[in-house]
Image (cartoon, rainbow, N blue to C red; front, side, top):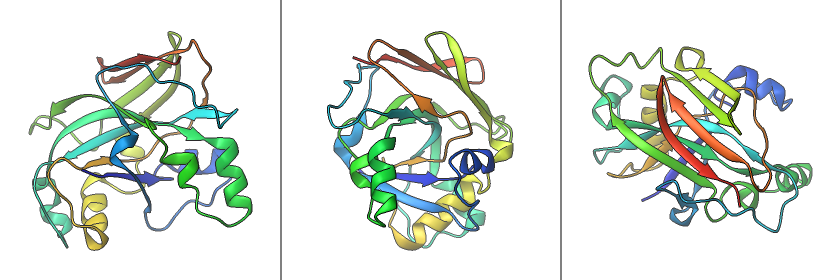
Length: 203
């Protein structure tokens, strides 16, 4: 199982981090040991002083595929969930300044927190899904898939040009504006529409 992440897929988020709005998807990977599930607590790592949450919708791949045409891409994922792409922002900034890869800031253990998944039904309008994140019972991020730069189907097709997609792979589809820091003792809760899909503590 692999975790494939999409960066800068909402224009407002790219702008808030002073990044250019991309003309094609920005892709990076996280290893299997980055996955944290079942509402287990997240333990603040000792190597960062500026850990940021990034709330994202997550697709679960349901069919093996390579070089998938966009018009068939919706046949390759069948569930949607919500997750947190944790980022050690201080490490990321240092690596970017040096022109170096920034996996140590993005792909560390437990950096991909995933909640429950729900089936993607014909009634679900994938181009109009609301989602949000609360920190300590206050809303800090909210997004809607109508603002995606690259749609779910385009992403699955694009990713499959470079990486064979396998059953069980997860695709983090990008975060909207509003990312920010967490501290020990914080509680996070994420929603798709009105359904609470993820809730855990920072320890």
